Image (cartoon, rainbow, N blue to C red; front, side):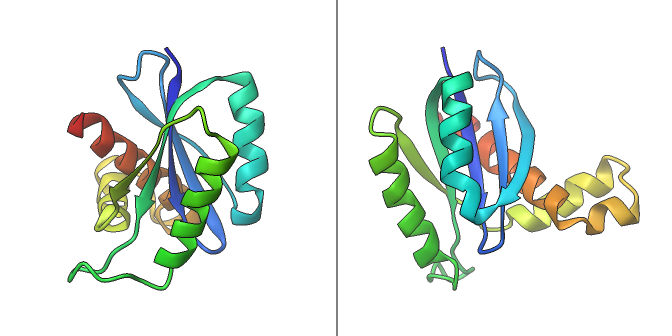
Length: 136
């Protein structure tokens, strides 16, 4: 059974999270520059075969598109083209950044670590992945 990888896409940074091989536990993986996403995923897929990809779809509270939504739709298309054998799922990512901050605070991370946007992006990707796992 392959791993499931989640993507919290942003214009500058992308937070990534991955499951264990049994697809039970979501764990933060990495934060990379958004331009490096496809190359990173291809290399990762060669090392660890992916069973699925999950990408957070940004929406406003009133379910409208955000300034990042069109970029995510473009990434979604590229993922489906580059990884035709890997199912690509989208999941609502509203509140994930806020939930990431709350989880980091509850986990006892210091103020400096909670301000690190790379850490926030990884934790947000983990929340997206955990939501996907719970929805199956």
